[in-house]
Length: 350
Image 1: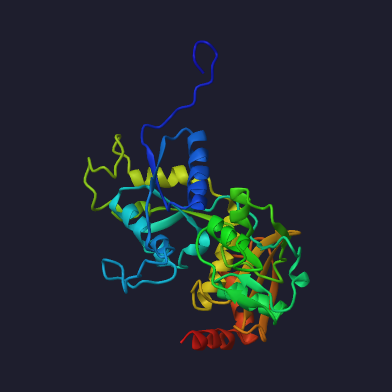
Image 2 (image 1 turned 60 degrees about the vertical axis):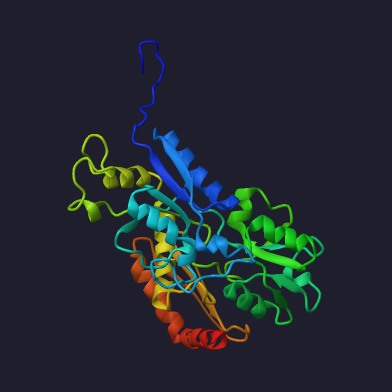
């Protein structure tokens, strides 16, 4: 407080540099995090980084066999590789991701400093002519490229057909409005964040379409504080002006945005995914939430044709470690034949 009685907020001179993809949703997420950091007194900048995954949205783009450094091109890495390269190089301090885009195991150079409060994790049904999946005529076309959504929708409606629908939310909504599909199924969180819920008339229960692990959650990724301590000399730009380790400063600043419930829930979900193969293209859903002082973890694996399902709802007391809960649910799924269902998915792709 100054001599005139005004409350002063201390602003750090150490600007936190955020790296983000350039889509409308990614920038909404980056600006959302930046606003919270600014409210905490930090100066923030956002750098837009174009990833291979973004380039692949262009039909004319030919995807390379590998990244420029020779590492394999995989479904999750296409949306994060260039951003993590900038993080490792010190060009940015924080990467804002959709958690479901991240692999279950991070490079040891990086850590998740925070999982902020989670948005609605459910999948949304978009259609104006028919306000529920059950109302669609036989043989209707659903716009989705997700193996998980396709398999779970077929379990509910075996007559459905699917249309490959790529691009950002606005692109998919435009293609649907042009008649390229009769309905869409998209993540509720992105639609809510962008205010594009005007045609959402059904949100699937988590036991109809179990969300992808981490769906609806943001992941705030920083450098691991200890990783560079022995190799970064005093005066390096990765250190702040006082000589304090910059990575620790960044981690602590970001960790104030962490939500303990969202962190636990998504950890448990990702332990299920890791135990069953760890790929984002698996027809697997997992969703954890707290009810009556217990964690409820819903998990589902579905055959590609929707004919066979392994479905588990597991309750555990608050205080159960996330790894223990996730691994217990994975074991229950395996006991119900989940690995055989996942092998059938892999065989179908091959």
